[in-house]
Every structure is written in structure tokens, then in C-alpha cells.
Length: 201
Ligand SMILES: NC(=O)c1ccc[n+]([C@@H]2O[C@H](COP(=O)([O-])OP(=O)(O)OC[C@H]3O[C@@H](n4cnc5c(N)ncnc54)[C@H](OP(=O)(O)O)[C@@H]3O)[C@@H](O)[C@H]2O)c1
Image (cartoon, rainbow, N blue to C red; front, side, top):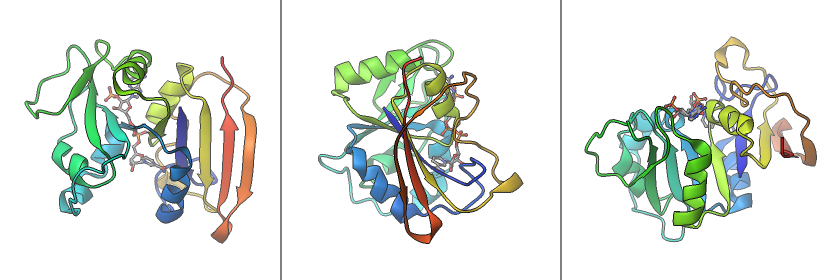
């Protein structure tokens, strides 16, 4: 499982305009089976999603799985049809409220989505071998602390987000650790792409 994230020099994932084209071109590196997104990442896009073209599901594309224990995501139809994913799946808990949205669900845990159990079920039931995490930090931090992340990929932008950056890529991860460098590449416009392996805890 790899987390690929666009950051500022001060580690923020928000508060600046990322190089979106470059970000997604690099995201293609892993050809993931499943894109794992946090609900807040999806909620931040919902307004744009409503207005986006809907070519329909991408045959052969990854499955989009959204950690949505509080049933906050609404735009499932738009997500399914926006042309990036082959399908969508809500990761929920045994006490998630049922919004009657008809989206396919995977239930793991009570109170909060049990990330380890959800990933095991994704591997078992959806043949997920490679998972790419799309998160502003909270989900990445939780995956780091749970020892579920294998790689971190940072597209570093040459700017400081300052107080406009209200999220950092590692979220609230508590465990200190040393990551193993895999690659470092200087790209156009001062962008730097850094990849690190996360050793087992
Ligand atoms: N720069 C980038 O590359 C990039 C990428 C994606 C998003 N973003 C930006 O980042 C912002 C959103 O980021 P975010 O950090 O607020 O949210 P996030 O990481 O995208 O998602 C938070 C989700 O993770 C779940 N979660 C967090 N800790 C958990 C735990 N311990 N166990 C189970 N589930 C857990 C939360 O569950 P609950 O619902 O239960 O709390 C919530 O559903 C948006 O503004 C978006 O635009 C930037």
C-alpha cells in the first residue's frame, strides 16, 4: 500500500495549488487495484464532482474505496461515473447510519472503520494487491500507526503553505520512525519527487 501525496515544503497537503497534472501522471506509477480515499478528501471535491462530466465507469480502472464510517459522502453516482474508477465502495462500520444511497458497502469494525480488517477484506473479496491512498493526512497517519503502509510518495512543491495549510501529510501519526529512501527525483518547476519505504514497526 502506497500513499502518494502532494505537499508543500512545510508538509502541508492543503493551502496551495498542487501541480495536478504531474501529480496524477506520477500516481499512474503504481497502477493500483484500489484507490483508498478518506471521506474528507471526497467531501472536499463534492461540489466540483456535481458539475463534472460523467462518461461512466472506467472499464479496467481501479475500484474507489472510501473510508466513510459516518456515512457523510453523498455523490456516489458522480464518483462512479466520473471516468476514473471502475466502481465505488463505501467502507463502513456495523453502526454506520444507512442513508439508503444504495452504494456497495464493506462493513469492518464498530465506531470507526477497522482499517486492517477493511484492507484484508479488500484483498480477499476484491483482489486488491496494490492500494494507493489518496488522503489529506488523517487517513495516512492512521495507516502509518496501524503499520499498514508500505511506501510514502511525496511530490514536494517549492513553497510554504504557512497557516493556510491546515493539514499535514502524516496526520496525527504518533509513532516516530525512520523511513528508507527509495528514490529522489528533481522535476520541472522546482518540484521534487521523494519515495520512501516504510519498514515494518
Ligand atoms: N495534497 C494532496 O495530495 C491531497 C490529497 C487528498 C486530499 N487532500 C486535501 O486534504 C483534505 C482532507 O484531508 P483530511 O486529512 O482531513 O482527511 P482524509 O485523510 O482524506 O480522510 C479522513 C478519513 O479517514 C478516516 N480516519 C482517520 N483516522 C482514522 C482511524 N484511526 N481509523 C479509521 N478511520 C480513520 C476518517 O474517519 P471518520 O470519518 O471516522 O473520522 C475519515 O473518513 C481536503 O482538503 C483535500 O482537498 C490533499
